[in-house]
Length: 167
Image (tube, rainbow, N blue to C red):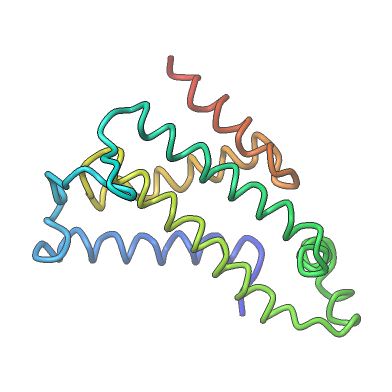
């Protein structure tokens, strides 16, 4: 039932509580160091062991995700999301329930984040709760803001800019 800046603050607070719980639940997460020595992922008998192998997996998944998001954006559902971002009162006047829309887009974002998290953990070969902390979330929000939140390619541009700054 919250929105706007309060939603961002509440999400970050929720993330902080969950991460701290995982760090302290050592039997599940391995504590601060995390869990190590995962076997190499395999897809249909093909073992993904080198960085190039990960690129061969990540690029098609990225193209599929972008294509899906472009498709969703052109559907009535995507237009309703744009309308919700522009004026939620007008959306409600049009008969669309903003709460259901907000939950559904949260689920869609969660699915994409889960896929990215699995790929990231497989690439690092370690699952540590500290890899998913507040600092990383703020960095990702900054990437979206630098590149532009209204476009699909903007967050990638923001990621390239912010990832290359330290170098």
